Length: 276
Image 1: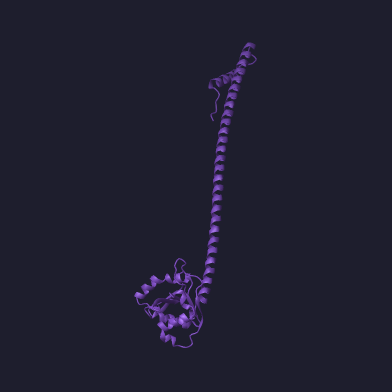
Image 2: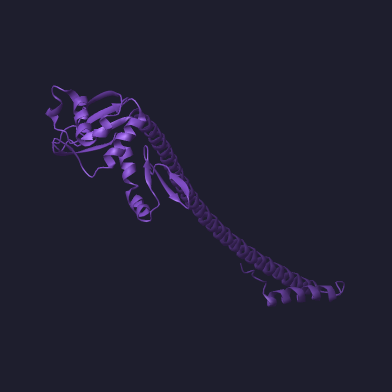
């Protein structure tokens, strides 16, 4: 803002007129001279007043301009504040959405963990109930007619393990076909499940089966395996690569029931639980 100053010439005139009036001896001054001096003084005062008015008007105009600039600056600042506030609100909304998604994900993971825990307990219970079972694979559907699944099991023992058949005290609780085929896309016969009274008799039978290169029933190739849930079979399968490596290094690997891996290292037996 520029402050306008009074004209030096006009100020000088007013001062000169005032000095003339002071220096004059008012007793010796004529009326005509007095009037001239007063007129000059009034004219100088009018000029000073006019200059002051112009200066004040200029200052007022400058103040108004400054006020408008300040108002514009405040409006601009207000607009920036509103824009920033809108962005903050948008960011908070996005953060809220992310928080909701994180909570949903955590809850889904907790539900999944609980489901997996329940499935694991059900699988463990199922495997526990099947602990004494042997699954016989490869027997045609019609073979047990007239003699039952237990009779088929006795024929298998007689054909493949005659020495085992001579042992007394091996008690069979039940023997029956599985209600469904394991692979519905194949027309293979349903498996026979034999439940023994004692776990040691099951292990003795499977050990004898592992000792033979091939098992047969009336010349047909068959297999005897432990009866496990599909998930436990998958867990056992996951150990195969590691099992082969340990076996090549003569570390005596074994798959423990239901799906743990054991091996010997530096004379000490290590056991690793189910990989699933």
